Structure formats: structure tokens, C-alpha cells
Image (cartoon, rainbow, N blue to C red; front, side):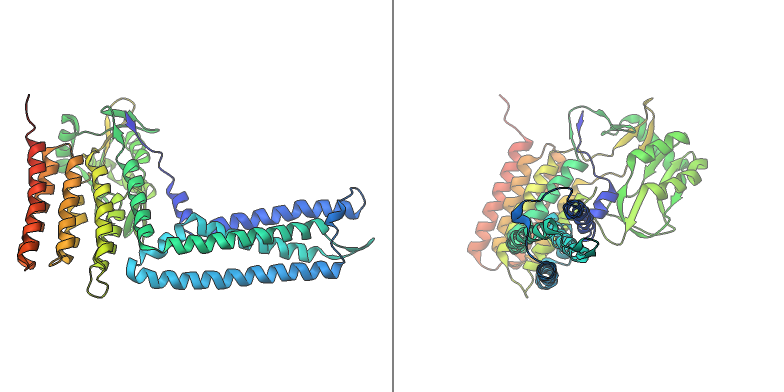
Length: 457
């Protein structure tokens, strides 16, 4: 069966990539905490309960001074620290690429840090506003003031954590490793390990191979299917496969998707085909709800996006303005890790069936050659005349070859290796460098040859 990770809702993913959701939750928690401590303070004011003596911390004026100082300190730290941090990240993104800012926003540590500060500020301001005069004299929320002081100490700890965290986050090795972890997670989600052909999802059974029946359906859809038109332009961020399979069953149709997450779709252009043709109008309305488009790509259902991020960092590092060879080598190492993971997974077109075993949805396929070329082409072009990077590319291809399971995959890697060798011969002038490069290419070719023609006992 398919050992498929549970895919998070695209709505949850959208909330993750904002700086307001977690702080808003912590602001609400801060307000609720104040309500609890205020009730206790009010009960103590009415002599209904007795608070410990160590909570009694002075007059109303001293309480106001303490809370004003706490609130002012917190909001000042928030403004200064985050302004400086965003400035540093803006400068760093010029080297890493503009997507660095999006990774900063997605970081849970950054969101929680901001949330703790604004939550503490909210609590302190509410406590400050509660100091007033009642029938028994001035009301001083002793417990609330003590809790505000404790939250201030927590804020100091969080501030130290945040400085250390952000200092580590903007270091190149950590940035690259973080993207690589996202790539591995996306691969595990999108290309689950297959134990048998069929598996169950909440809405439809997923067939990970193209059987004769779906192959015949494809020909029928191409010949007599109806077009489904995109409602709006943008990058396809999420596809509700199970939802589409349900829709197809309701209208007794078969849907063939022409695009996958990460592709840019244009309003008014075809995005899918439906058989029979008469169901196209109903599917088109449903597709607008099952597809999520936006102004940018995301990692949800799109592992190629993480590959593109690593490639972007590598080619920026190889540019004459930066000339950072070691960063490019690090990107190649992590790319080989991700491609090795992909090489062991099934990338064929996926077919969704209903409970009766009838095909309802044929998803757009993932191309192994395109993924490999996406990972290496731009780096190979930017590495012209750079023996160290060329050699590491050949070593990376060899590492990926070790994880392949088909001759077709190894042919793709060998073709890429041959292009790397031609680039080296055209751009590297030092004979000893060429000799070294050819030696690494020979090692790649020998390894692939051994895997294609295993020794027979």
C-alpha cells in the first residue's frame, strides 16, 4: 500500500506563511490570562480570598509605574529587533534570493517570538487599565502585576533565543539545509513509498501505475473530451485530488488534469479535459473550488520548487559578483540527496478510482528527466570554466545513480554527465584539470555500466 504522509490543508499552509496568525493567537491568550488573574485580584479586593503576602507589591502608583515600564520596554524591543532583523534578511536575500524573506515568515520560531512579545504587551496594557478607584478604595491588581513581571522575564529568555535563532537562520549552510529538509518532506508527501499498486485515500483509491484501462481512457479523452477552462491566472498552489474524484463520480465522468502544482495557468486557457464532453461545464465550476492559485509557488505538492530554490542559491553563488564556489558545492550535495530520494519513488501518472474501481481522475505526471535537468542545467551553464564545481556535479550524478532503480533513470543521468564533460572540455584550459574531470566522468560511466549490466552468477 502507499505509505502516504497526511497532506496539510492549503488553508493551514496559508496561515503558516503569515506573521499575524500566531501573534493573534497569543494576543488572545494574553487577554484570557488577564481575565483569569483579574478575577482573582477582584476576589482578593472584595476579601473573598487571601493572596500570599509576597504578591503584595506596593501602591497603585508603583503598580502603574511597573506596568508602564514593562509595556514600553516590550514594544520598543519588538520594534527595534524586528526592524533590524528584517533589514539583515533583506540584505541576505540579495545573495540567497528573494524567497529568503518568505522562509523567514514561515519560521515558527520567529512567529512565536513575535507572538510572545505582543501577548505580553497586551497583558501589561490590560493590567495597567485595570488600576482604578472602586468603592473600597483604589484597586491594585497585585497578582496581575506579578504575572506581568514574570512574563517580562520570559520575554528576556525569548529575546536571547531569537537573537541566536536568527543568527543561525541567515547562515548559508543552515539556509540550504532548511530548504533541503523542505524538499525531503515534500518528496515524502508527493511521492509516497509504494508497497502495492492500489491504496486507499479518504475519497478515492489511488492507482500509481498506468494500466491498460487508463491508457485507453487517455486516448478517448484526447479524441472526444471537453475542455475545462481556467477561471483565473496564477501559479497553481494546491489541487484537491480527492475532491475532484468525488466530483467526477457525481457527474459520472473522467477528468484528465493537464497541469500540476507549480505550473502557471492562464485565465481562459484549458487546464483539464473531461469525458464525456457534456460534463465539462459542471466540472469547470467544481474545478474552481478544488484548485488554489496564487501569485507565487509554494512547497505544497510542488517539490520542484525546493529544487529551484537550491539551484537559485547555487547560480547566485557562481555569479562573478559573488564568486562563492563552496556555496555552490553545498547546494550540489543537497541536490544529490533530494534527487536520490526521488529516484527511489514512483513518478508515473496517478489514477484515482472510486469505490467501484472505475477511473475518475488522471493527474498530470511528474517527469524524472525534467527534474534532473532542472537541478543541473543552470548550475552546469553557470559553472563553465570552474573545475571544482564540474567535478562535484559529476560526483553528485554518481551518488544519484546509486539510488536509481531503472535503466531509463540512469540514461538521464548519463546524458547530463556527458553535457557536463562537454562543458568542461570547452571551457577548462588546464590539461591536468581536464584529466581530473575525465577521471570523475569515467567513474560515473563505469558505475552506471555496472548497474545496467550486473554480473550474473
